[in-house]
Amino acid sequence: MKTIGLAELNRTLPERQMLLEACQGGCVEVIERLVGLQAQVASPPYFGLWGRMGSFAAGDLMGLRDAKVVVRAA
Image (cartoon, rainbow, N blue to C red):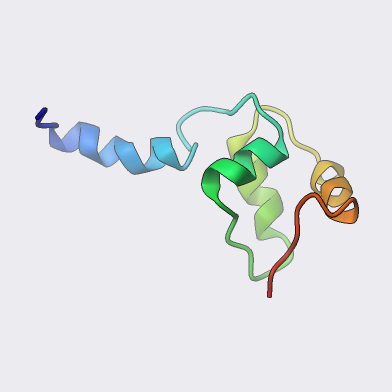
């Protein structure tokens, strides 16, 4: 079993959360990998995707929502 150092351990979670470098996939791929996106207020899913994707427009997520590809759970 490999032992990892503190620096590598500290980078593991941000890497899994796709926060270290921009993802080249689309909204659906990012949401699927994260198994959802925390968003109690209206704007956070937009900021969350914008921070993880190379190119993101709010209309991308709104179109997926309107087509019922993604949903907002209460």
